[in-house]
Every structure is written in C-alpha cells, then in structure tokens.
Amino acid sequence: MRYNLLFCDAKILHSQTMIKYIYSILLIVLLNPVFGQLRLDTLDWRSPVDIPILLSGNFAELRSNHFHAGIDIKTQSKVGFKIYAVQEGYISRIKVAPGGYGKAIYITHPDGYTSVYGHLKEYNIQLDKYVRSIQYAKHSYRVDIFPEKGELPVKKGDIIAISGNSGSSGGPHLHFEIRETSTARPQNGLFLGYDIDDTIAPKMYYLYAYPQGLNSTINGARNTKVFSLKKTNGKYRIKAQDTLKVRGEVAFGLKVNEYLNNSHNRCGVYKLNLFVNNELYMQQQYDSYSFAETRYINSLMDYEQNVNIKRKLYTLYREPNNKVSIIKQEVNRGIVTGQAGQIKKVDIEAIDAYGNKSELNFYVQFLQASKTQLARSNDKIVIPWQNSFVLDTNGFKVSFSAKTFYDTLFMTYKENPKRYPGTFSSVYTLHKRTVPVHKYFSIEVPCDSVDSTFYDKLILAQIVKKNYKAVGGLYVDGYLKAKVRSLGKYVVLIDTVPPTIKPLNGLADKTDVSGVSSIQFKIRDEFSGVMSYTATINGNWVLFEWDSKNRLITYNIDEYMPQEGFCELELKVYDGRGNETIFKKEFEVYPEPDHDIGQ
Image (cartoon, rainbow, N blue to C red):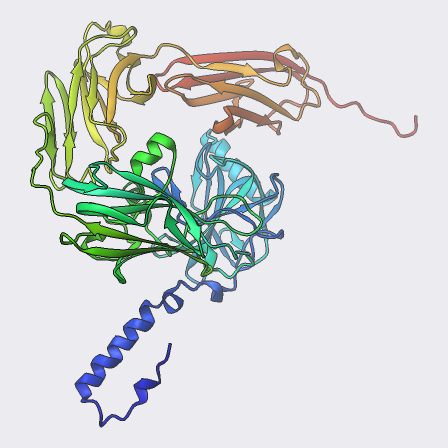
C-alpha cells in the first residue's frame, strides 16, 4: 500500500479536504489486517514449557456453551513436564476442582497481563504444601485461593508445576492463557511470538444457507440447505453448482477448520470475512472477548447442528440479541437481500493467525418473491426476544425474563398427561432443545400422589433421546421448582438409589497397608450424580483427590496416615438427592523394620 500521496502539494487541496483525505487514509491503515492485528510479542514472555510447542487447540475455538479461552499445548500424550512462569510476577489465584481446569495457577505480571496454567498434575513442593494446608483446614478438595500480592512471588523461568490431565481435560496437555489483568479478558495467545509452525490454510467443508423469513426459499426449499465444497485452482467452490436461487433473504454459515503443522487436531480460525459484491457484510475477528459474553457462542455457531450431530460451524450473520464483540463489522446483520433478477457475488474468507487464507466464491440469484404469503401456525406462542413472558397452564408454569432468546421465538408447547413408569408428573414439551437459550428460566411442575417421605428425592429430568438427564430442583408446596437453561421435554422422577463405591488395587481384601503409596476408589451415581464425599482415618479427615471425568478419588498416603498400628478408613459418598453410601475398612500398619548395617 502506498502513502506518498499524503505529501502532495498543499495548494492542490483545500485544507478541509486534506483533513478528510488524511482521515480516510488512517482508517484504511487501521482496518488493514496487518496493522489491526493484536500484538503481544513485545511482552517478551518465555514459553511455559521447554518442549516444542505443538497445539491441540487454539484461541476462541467453538466449544459447547463457551469460547476456548487459551491455547492447548501438547505434552506428547503424557504427564510430567515442567511448567515455567512465563514472566516475573506473583501468584494471584490457585484453583483446584474436579472439573474445569482441574489444578490451575494464575500469575499476575507487572506488564498488565495475567498468565493461566490449567490441567496441572501437581504444584511445585512449596505450592503443594501451601495448597494442601488450606485443603485440610477447609476439609475440602475443592479450593479457590486468592493469595495477597507479594505473598507468592515468582521469577521468569521458575518451575511452578508439573503438566497433567486434571479437571475436564480430554488428554494430557497444558491449557495456557493470557488475560488482560484489569478486565480479565482472554487474549489470543497465538500472538505472543512463540515458535509455532503454521503454513496450512484453513480447510472449508460445507456452506450452510439459511432462509430468513417465512416466505424466503433457497433453491425452492424453505429450510436450511447444506452444500458440500471442493477446492479448485486454489479456491473453494460449491460442488454441485455455483449459483444459489433465492427468494427473499438469505444468510450463510461455514464449516471450516484450522490445522497447524505437525498436528491433526481441528482448531478454530482467526478471522472470517463475508463479502457481497465486494462489500464487507460481516467480519468476525478473534483477538479477545469477555467471559460475560462467552455464551453468545450459541448464537454465533449453528446450535442445532452442534446438538444434533456435534458439528461446530460458524454462522455469518448476527441474531438481534447476540451482543458478542467478536463481530467487528456488519451490514444488515450479515443478511443478504436483493431485487428480483439481481445476481450477487458472494466471497467468504477464512484466515488464520499467521495469515494463511482460504476463499470460497459463489453467486446468489434473486427470484421474484412468492405471491403466496405464509402465516405462522396458530399453535405457536410468540415470544419476542426483547420481552419477558410467563406461560401458566394447568398448574405448569414457565417464566422467561427479557432477552432469554437470541431472536423472536415461535414456541410450541404440549402436555402429555400419560404417566410413564417411574414418573410423577405429566411430560411437558417446551419447543425443541435444538433452540439455544441465553439465560436461565424458571420452571414449576405440579406433582401429585407423592408420599411426603420422598419430597426431598423428587428431581426434574429432561428427556433426551429416550433417556433421562437429571436437572435438579426443589419440591415446594406441591410443585417441583427449578432453574433450567434448555428447552425440550421435562418430567419429574424420584431418585432413591445411592451412589456406588468400588475399592481398587485389591483394597477390599487387604488388611495390611504397610508400604502402600495410595488408596483409590471408583465412585459413581447413575442419575443425579456424585455431589460430594468425605473420608476419615481414625476419625481424622484426609484428602482424597477427585478426578470426576474418570470417577476416581485417590488418597496419597501422607502424614495423616498412622505410622503403625490399627486404622479405620470411613468413606461417605452423597448424590444430588442426598442418598448416601458408606464404605468402612479396618487395616493394620506395621512400622518399617530397622536395618543394622553391621549384621
């Protein structure tokens, strides 16, 4: 791009004209991808690992109900690598949980950013002692600790932990984030300047076309159309045709994956551009976002496809109640319109963080609008997205607050009074679970013929593909009341089945635990889920670590285990309805024999 025209003779241009001209050039510069790109490489952060950085996940990937907040660094399919502080600072948070990031560390740095390290196996010796002392004080494996500034200082390159697979991790790796400290907004860690190889352009698979409005059609159909793509001469095309015939309005979505060198993992793209006749209609750019807006992902992607076939794809238009800041530019919310007879050229670009780009080209031919005006069916309940709404019928009550949905919902509702075996209410169908919900809404289900001794065992369940999924709720004066965040089918059940406890490593048959380094159990509950557990040895609370994804709890023998003599282990496990299972076991512990070197 050339800018030498800025130095032309001032006599040629009126001063006001010159100001407008300079302003327009500055806009071009600022909107240019090269100049507008996030820059973090000047922070001089070292790598959090001392192995080559290969990624299994990147920033702002489409995940269920949230954007991915960091980058996932592979650890060669194993645990045990040293994790380093990327810059000097102080540990501002330590969180331990059976799910989520598992064992995690947050370090606040003087440069205005915070680094986050998740799915750790263990902390360094000093941090481990610090965390365990708090866990024992609180009698809880789960802890969320916020040390004072300066209490736990670190230097750049300090070993802070060992890599692992804790929490909701799908395999050994390090989840690593950079956040702006003042706002807690995650930033795109691909711009930290780390040595990450990527020469592969994003790969496009499917174009989705969505008719907008009752009377819109795509190739004669009123429903979403899916088109397979092929790459020809370096650009993508629709396999069967290059022109879509549209009546009314249309919007688009794209199934596209990003791949990095030496990795087969599917990652997210950095930028998506939708052009209509060379005009930028929609731009999404993944530099940063707020955790407060992360659930808008359910509107940014095709939620129905994710629910039905686990396909995550980007939609290239904005629904009215989608406030996500990742959308940088838009015309008509990305929805394409045209007059009868018009043919418009559509180009979609997918660009990764390293400038590799793929492009899809096709055309839209607009036909004469249909003369037959369709009307919504009378069985639909209209809920404008801006409004609150209460449905109260036959004792069943649902309350939606304003902006619960991303667009106006034409909801269907049905009550099936037929009682299925083991149920304690009618089955209530609230539209379809393939429609996303942004906010929690309240639901009240009338219950009858329930003995009072079972009130605390009643539980709201969602019917998903003929299976029951526990939701929760509380019985109050003849109703089961709950907060839910999904449409679909609901019914009331009773859960009186307690959790199960299975001792591992032959523990059930052991009477001597001398020399044993750890004690493990499988704990599980088939419906309402394991809610909590507690374990004691000779009446003293001991720390069992909880790996919820593997339903495993582990006690690593520590100073709270008697060094010799009799010991009694008692483990209590509770499910979501308070059902309890108790495991007791008595052991003997024998002291290590003294070895006389002279004998």
